[in-house]
Amino acid sequence: MNFKYAKRMSNLGTETAFEVLAKAKKLEAEGKHIIHLEIGEPDFDTPDNICQAAIKSIQAGDTHYTPSAGILPLRESIAKYMTRTRGVNFDADEVVMMPGGKPVMFYSIIALVDEGDEVIYPNPGFPIYESMIKFMGGKPVPIPLKEDKGFAFDPEDLRKLITNKTKLLIVNTPQNPTGGILKKEDIIKIADIIKDKDIWILSDEIYSRLIFTGEHFSITQIPGFKDRTIILDGFSKYYAMTGWRAGFGVMNKEIAPMIAKLVTNSASCTNTFVQKGCIEALEGPQESVDKMKAEFLARRDIIVDGLNSIPGFSCIVPDGAFYAFPNITKTGYKSRDLNDHLLYKANVAALSGTAFGEYGEGYLRFSYANSRENIKEAIKRIKGVL
Image (cartoon, rainbow, N blue to C red; front, side, top):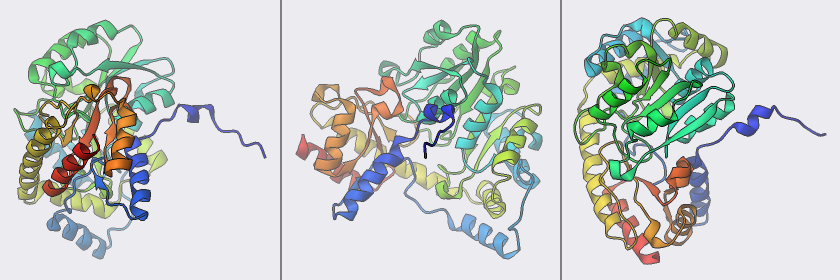
């Protein structure tokens, strides 16, 4: 039988981290010892108080549907958290709880982007941005992140890319894959460039509590931008809850019901007892977040020093998240070739910079969400095969 699929499926990309993980797992099944520096996942366990809150919720019978936007106590808790951390007033009606952070991207682009609309997004950047833009028939317009700017983009580059078809601007700070941040002055310039244009902003702030230099600044803190911005945030990175699938979007009260309707039409709602665990995450002790951040900082310094000791590597110090993004052009390798070389010869799993877009050529991404000992061993192995 000659099966035919919808044409839009040919526009759907993927997240290469999971493909490399599959290759690494195959090598492990063959008896190889792989050091995993490819997956952007904290290697810590979810704090016990969060786990216990979810367990108690299950035992109490919280195993049924909830409103698509999430239970009110959690949305109220998120609104208070966002008000406290962004310095802007939010309320529960502006919060939509979702099963992970990716649905915030997915639903926002579905709700805002028509066929032919242009979307400006960071490159190298999280690959699902470009994937979803293409899937919806939009035109992806990459804006390069520049190493000499600490992997921020130049606001003047943004000015040149805007046309009368530009519908959405995606910003991500701190950034995946580079670990770079957009500083307050950069965001103010961005806001000034688009203030008189009908352009929405999707602000991916999933790493906002993992900043090592300075403080997080959200574009919603600029007068007039809160109502035209959808903030993406969640629980995966701060509380080691990647498998819980718990993310949220914060947006104006007009679009929030539309996004909630998309949740109704797809996932129905976020898991009930997961939401109870999320309340405990926000309102319970925060020492685990502080300890995790301190450990990531120590690992950052180890991996940056180590990478800079490898001939042909050059790595600037990332200001946030848990990624190092070294320039490897002087090794003579293309990014994908070196990535494969390290996996199969050194048994170190990383990601090619091109997994994050065309401007990622000449770079590799290393996630330092692994132990100090494994990071040191990875550096030793890389030197051994180069």
